[in-house]
Image (cartoon, rainbow, N blue to C red; front, side, top):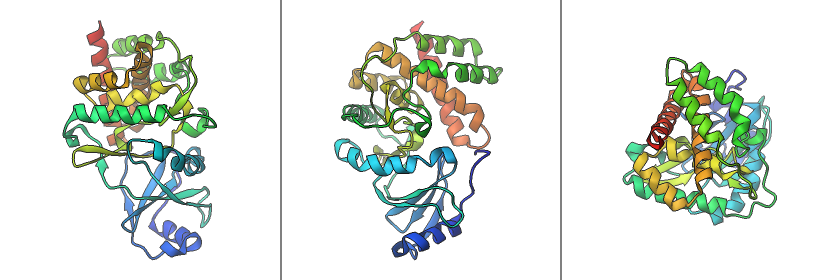
Length: 299
């Protein structure tokens, strides 16, 4: 998926485990197919998963998740990954890596959700719980979390470039108008809050028709909460989106910035992953189209 991606395989993971965590070296190991862009996943036995960063930009996520996820987990409404061990570079692999407890579930899709309105309510409760945790000491936005949580205007140039690159595929004028509207919303002028930073369907698990867990906290940080509203457009439809908004009780400006985040993230990801990651490209296209539909209903 990335030009600078480091290759990993089962043999590498087995060697890393044998050298650093020999108590797990003889457990069955299976490479997992994932639409995740930052880490390669290997299921270890029945109850563990190994995550190896694919790119250098994701390597800092290992220390961050090991530090913060155990502190955040007891305060959240949905299960999140539990780090079990942190590996160090070795066997030709250049970065830290982690072993986590396995969480059962399937990647979230609209089709797998039994009740979208219930899911929207529970998603809102999860977001509100995270945003309500004391952010003292939390990491400010930066390279470690793809700058999620920064002022929306900092994404202006990249978003307009993405709009131009999609000429002929989507309505360029409508995209520009929707983006301009988001930029016109008031900026976040209150203290920063904890943010997941990447609430994509691929980072939510479904079990028995309900959202079962929130995973992949690589974009974790403290900043503008609007970026966590992207899930309203990349997973939900118009009716359930209204339920999520009502449950969150966010102000109009934050909702508009959230719409802008969903548009920007979708627009930038769509051309980048169109051929290398069809699943993420499809999620991105859905989010962009939902934003456009919302924008049309506002006029």
